[in-house]
Image 1 (tube, helix red, strand yellow):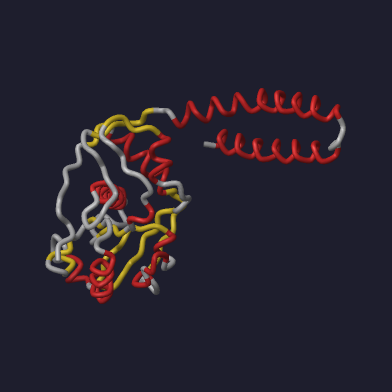
Image 2 (tube, helix red, strand yellow):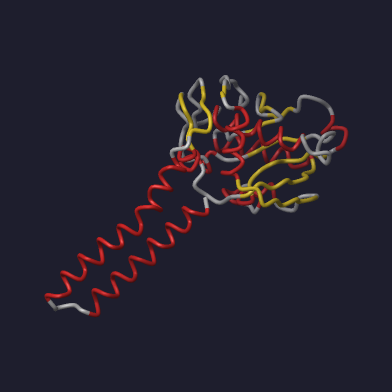
Length: 236
C-alpha cells in the first residue's frame, strides 16, 4: 500500500501548494487563469496515483458464501477472525502446546463482509485502524473479570473458549491445569482500550508488527472461499 500512502501525501502537499499560490496572487485577474491551470496540472499529476489506488482497492482476494456480520452477542465476522488468530498462533512452536484463546471487540470492526466477492477495499472498511496483533499470557484468575465484561457489553468476539451460562469454558483442561492461558488480541485492547482492564499486568506480553488489517487480508487470501457458519459462543 506504499503507493497509496504516496498518493495521499502528494494530494495533501498539492492542496497546500495550491492554497499558498492563491493567497499570494489574490485579487489579480491573472490569478484565476493561473489557478485553473494549476488545478488541471495537479489533477493530471494525481490521476496515475488515483488509478493505482482504485486498482489496488478493487483487487478481489476471495469470497464468502454467507454474510459475515458485526453484531452482538454472536458475531460471525468476529468469530471467523478470532479463529484465524488462534490458528496462526498454533502454527508457531511457541504456542503449539499452549492454551490459546482470542478476544477482540466489536468496536474495532467497522463493516460487515456481505456474501460475495471480497476486495482489499472491503477489508479497509472492516479494519481502518493500524492496530497490531499482541499475545498476552494471563492467569486464570482473570476469567471472572472477562466474564463480567462480556455480560456488561452484551458479548464480544471470542475464540478458543465459550461463555456458557455466564462462565467461560475451555475445550480441554490445559488452562485449568497450567493456571494460565494466552490471549491473541490487538495492541489497543492490550493497553486497556475499550475498558478491557483485565489485560493489564499480564504474566507475559509479546508484541508483533503484524497489522490486523494485513492479517485479515492474508486470511481471506488463504481461505479463498469462506464458508463460516453461525454459532452460539456467547450464552448467559
